[in-house]
Image (cartoon, rainbow, N blue to C red; front, side, top):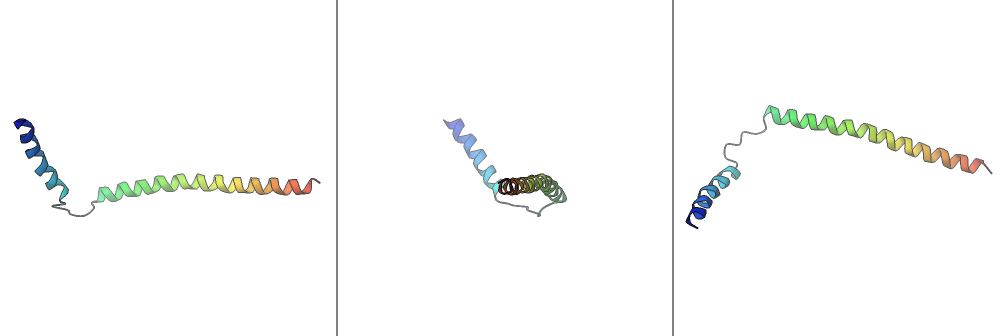
Length: 71
């Protein structure tokens, strides 16, 4: 029990200091590079999604026109 109390006594202040934000210098260049890379991935996924949705809408509209003309 005493060993557990010692370990908790050592770990608890270390995590509190790590969470305090001491020495925060702002975002570095690598953070901005990572965010930019993430943005490129998101945009790269949005382009095919928009193309798929527009093709779906055009297909539905074309089928609706042909059904009305077939009478």
